[in-house]
Image (cartoon, rainbow, N blue to C red; front, side, top):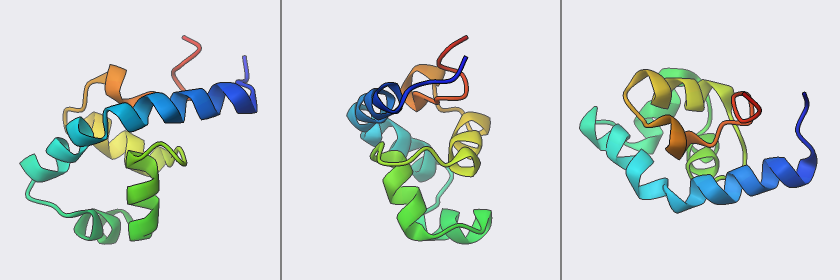
Length: 82
């Protein structure tokens, strides 16, 4: 089932509440947003916008998941309807 635009926006707003928790995952790996961007081959803006819930970058969300971010903090549209 595909999510509506409004549902995706709501997930982003929910993720924004957990931005600090997600930042702790980067900090725990000793990475800044810019360093993670270089590592993933995305822009620093993509990191910031994903953490703040403005976009849903699969690369960034997958990296966070693989490095211990709680699923409830990710608010990933790809897993929201499961």
